[in-house]
Image (cartoon, rainbow, N blue to C red; front, side, top):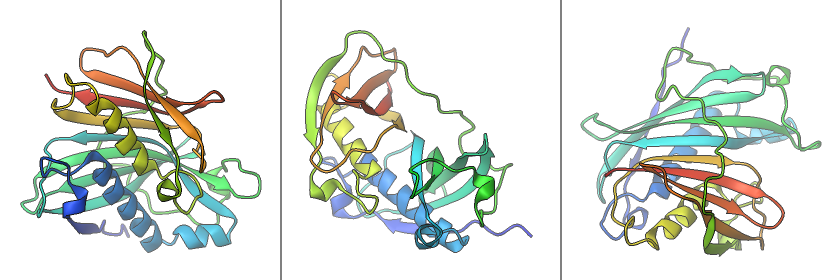
Length: 246
């Protein structure tokens, strides 16, 4: 019997908002992360159960499509579900974000890996002693998230150093912090600062450890997208593509 998908209610706090009293993009990511943790726990494959079995979960891709930015004081209903498995290793998880009138505020899709703590390698999901229930017919975004190609005219627009306040239980920078870093970089461009954001894609390639310094490299825009990579001398840590209106 198919389980009902729960939704979780998040009041938008003062600290979740930007200077225009609107929900920050990173707060969207915070709410989705928390919902994914709660959903995994409910379905018998939560963080502690994974750790006890020698595994941890790692997000590798995320795309958020935003229809409307809610404001301080509103409440959001966030739901998530495991959709399918791709290539035995990648678990697809989708999200729906509604306001109190059940209008769709935003939708998202993401890709996750289950990593063996001892080897540091991703595992075939069929080897796990437990898996969540899947909802293959339920799509929020039916997109395959691919790696982004570097574009022309790369330039460093901002540097960020990973401090203790950026680090989560996996001992690297929390994925939600990347959104703050990228939008700090975008805010430096007066032509972009007040353009409407319509979508955000992140490819998480290599974790950023405490003390590491990252260059945020911006590339030539496409017609409706801004491209920013987080890099240092050793590697590309993340890729971001921001869809903008106008």
